[in-house]
Image 1 (tube, rainbow, N blue to C red):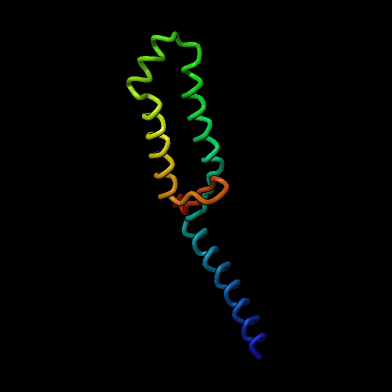
Image 2 (cartoon, rainbow, N blue to C red):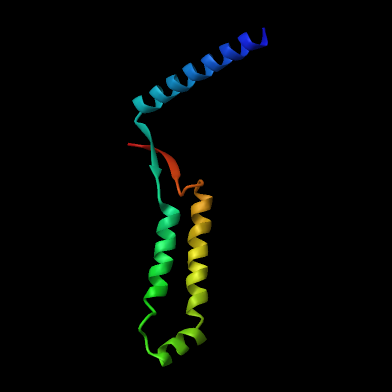
Length: 100
């Protein structure tokens, strides 16, 4: 008997979810998934560090005194925290429900 109830509930949940999805699409809502956000953040950080290559020693010393490396780390951490608050999932994906 419990298997029958579980099968009925599973079927009802699937019907309700597809019905709810169809209603949302009819109202103009859709789901958008942004992927690759974590790799983009890593690329931006690497580009910022790579921009320092080839600079003279005096300039690199001044950059070190000004703690530019710490600033880059703080900005990257703030961007990652914002992405996490926006719902960043493993694999670098964010899904949003938007209205057209």
